[in-house]
Length: 72
Image 1 (cartoon, rainbow, N blue to C red):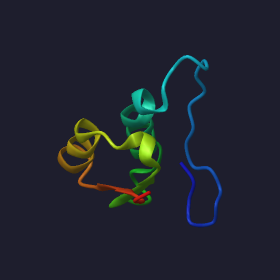
Image 2 (tube, one colour):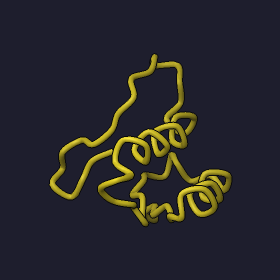
Image 3 (tube, rainbow, N blue to C red):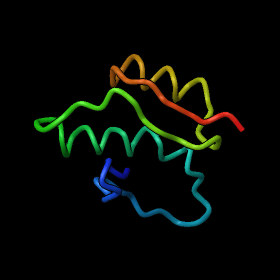
Image 4 (cartoon, rainbow, N blue to C red):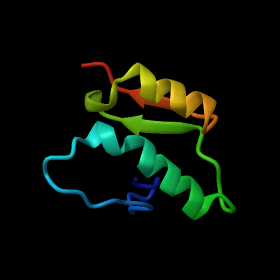
C-alpha cells in the first residue's frame, strides 16, 4: 500500500495464482498492525479489481474506512 509520497508502506508477496482481491483484507490488516500507532486510514484507493461488496463491508465495519474505486 503506497503513501501520499508514493513510498510503499506495506506489501505481501504471493504466487501469481493468488488473486489481488483475495489478499486485500490481509494487506489492510497488516497495514493496521504495522502502523496503528502512527495513523488510521479512512480511505483506501483501489482499482476496479477490488470492487467487491464483501471488501467494502469489511473496510467499513472492521477498519472504520471506505474503499475508493475510480469509475471506468
